[in-house]
Image 1 (tube, rainbow, N blue to C red):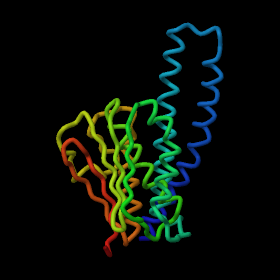
Image 2: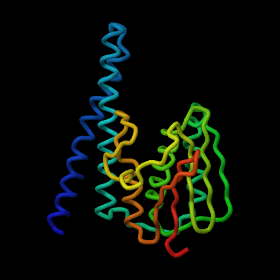
Image 3: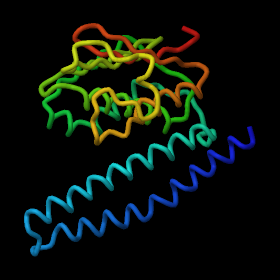
Image 4: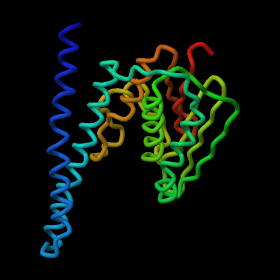
Amino acid sequence: ERSGYKQKQCIENASYERQTPIAVALNQIDVLLESDDLTQKNYLEINQIRNTLKRMSTLNQSLLMLSKIENQQFKDKEEVVFNDVVKTMISDFSSILEFKSIELDLIENGEFKTIINKDLAYSLLSNLFKNAIKHNTNKGKIIIELDNHSLKIKNNSNRKTPLNSRDIFNRFYKESGDQLSTGLGLSIVKTIVDHHSNMNIYYDFEDPFHIFSLKNKNS
């Protein structure tokens, strides 16, 4: 157990150390991309490097988040009403919903609440929501349903068959082969849920919707 803790600490320290040079490199590339001397070929090549660094930064931040959750560093817990977190999240993601012309329905049949760190509650929902946006269709639909016992996020997708429910929460697992994805979003979701004994997460498919459900164990 002590060895495992040291390994997690090592991962966390390494993630911190990597984040600063990545941020510096991204800033330098942004300055370079504003130069008038670049050819179109140079611009495209440098922009590709920028995208790779951004993916590295996202991956690094995700690994850091996983390490913090596993080391139980989010200790301040309170009763969180997820209806409020959902409304904050919808406001934060309104621009991308509009850009992708995704219709959003919020259905509240009660209050879904549980004891959790408030920042983790937002991270949990935002990762589920980003997944629903990422794998949605243009002019698609997302439905968020809440009652006293559960929260469901439903999205339609170009994929008309169920996902592999055994593997989708595994780290670095990708169904789509998307090279820009870190494959860690749903793993973060599962890790947060696993560290809260009062919740479960489920995946289901009801054509045309892929559905992720949070449920209170005592309901």
